[in-house]
Length: 210
Ligand SMILES: [Zn+2]
Image (cartoon, rainbow, N blue to C red):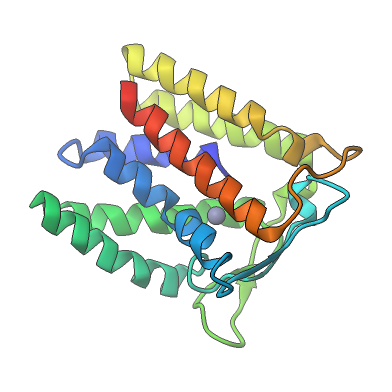
């Protein structure tokens, strides 16, 4: 999931306006930002399908640090503490952990039973697998983004957020519907770098005008 996560960032920002927007945007992206660094480092493993860009064919073999509820949330704590310390704003700590945990929760809707709960060996894995139904997953993710963002923002920031969400989601379209085209991403590292670039760019573009 991509844009759906950012709707929760806008909601957290509405609920805790004393936390700067870039901080909540980073919080909801934290699992994928961490993942995009751990894959090239060889610590977490993903296998892409060179013949299809569809999300349902991506095999997340191992990502206990970035994408487990318990271990992943525990790892978000030091980052939350660090940012809270630098900005001298203690509210950031629980908000950062909540944002990071929301990423895991939303991912359980789309992922294919590959998300670990604890993050340790022999762990239970969950995922409702909405990615198996690409067109539906595409519609549901943007509808969720639009509804939650509308609850959280108003005026120009709302219009801006709906537009950038739509643009980023449209760029993602091949991963939902591109069944008969080759995958433009050729390696797991390429996929990780693309995720880092995508999340980083959205955080930047959203922070610029909201
Ligand atoms: Zn994720």
